[in-house]
Length: 120
Image (cartoon, rainbow, N blue to C red):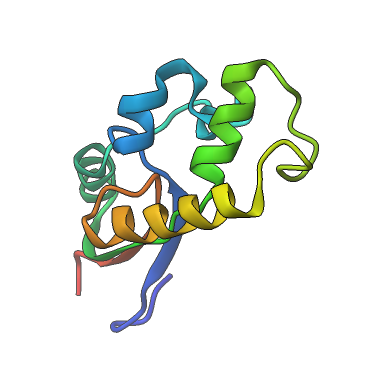
């Protein structure tokens, strides 16, 4: 259904990253029961190729949520749409800076995948 130069964008959490390695079962992006499967970069590349796509590019766009969301899960607190009053603005700012660093080093916890048809 894509034109010859068409692309598909898919944004999703990525397993195997820093947050996954450090928080384990408390990683907020596990997000059960919504996420039935989480892929590593290589796992998603394989699935895409099996479905007739090529991976053109990946953009990491994780943010401070990987930290404060996981800290809430770790503490057993409910996530109610934001960090609430649990964390200071300095903590959240530091996590935002760390998320940017993880994105630059290709270790963020979510990414945008740019796919194109392998048939063109």
